[in-house]
Length: 467
Image (cartoon, rainbow, N blue to C red; front, side, top):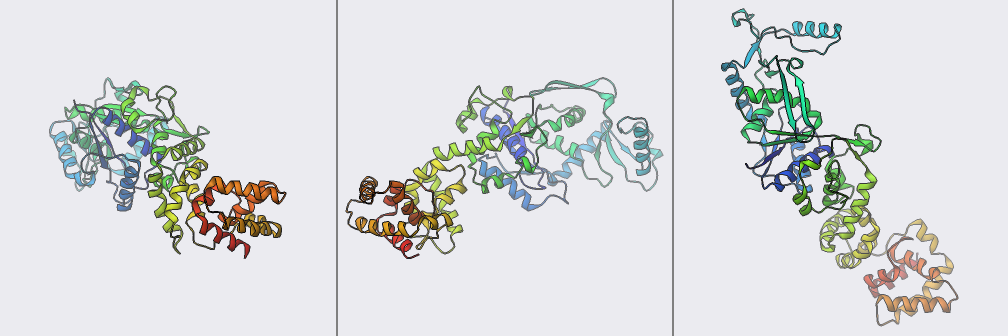
């Protein structure tokens, strides 16, 4: 059997973090078993589904590196097929037309509420003669669900889950206007797409009972179900924006690397011993549903940030450069310095040790790409007081005569100059850092000087002296 999984989001907004994890688990399970991972857009809610939301789903999945097999399927475009199956159920005696009025349904609901029980359709039209149908009323089509016995789900995460059939009513398959319901559409689409494993959040577990009945009514194979516990905030409460329930693209815009977010989502509810840093190749090799936990996972933004910092440190400098340079172009509309890319490339090793996000990398590397004169922060300006400028002017003269412009030679000269001035090295290095970077913090100032080059260094010192 070829394993076939699917991710089936509704395009009513961004690809949120819970959906991204569901997609990841489906993708990994399919790739682990050498199967297929399919994408279906459940766009039947025409009022809320938008082309922009569909694009956001594509963009989010692509950024995460979750490639799907074949073309994405639109559920809305398959409405004719859904109606065809409903008709087949009618003809096979597994469904019936229900002519209950809104008033009758309201009465059932109020009676159930008065008796302290959940609302269930009472089967008024289940075995009634269609000849009794009132004139001018468009019926809904309901599944004739079994009333005796129980429905069992052998869930690959939750284990064996059972419900008595008398706890389920005859669900609507087609509305009075002929549009298919979610429950019908999902089953038909999963069957036609040959889905073997339905991996989704455990908020869909109750749906699985009804969907199983529909599969059996059509004499179709029931897929394997795996219902994953939802993600909660660090405080154990349901995820919200304050916990980090953002769209995937917002994490990208906040400076997360896709491999870091992918690694973090993998560890939310799944584990492989004590392993925390797991490459994509390892994840595909190791992933199975046996190690998915039954308890809700807790989202910890600090842990994600720490993991992102690790991936930034381990990232290939050339890959980071490709990511950063377009962002610099966008940030500095006035244009970049001529040597900007070369400087960033040389400085990345020092910069990425101090950054937890790519935004921090952009902020910290900005002084390498801007044109002169650079902007000074308030703290940098304070460092460039009268005494500091006097020392810088003297140091500039020594630097102009330095022929071997390397970090070690520059540092040796600075240390010697500090001794001559009877000053601490910090009293020389800090004003120098302020003049060269516009900040009071940066990678090692002598490293910065080597990367900037002699002419740029001397030019920035001169700018600072004249500020």
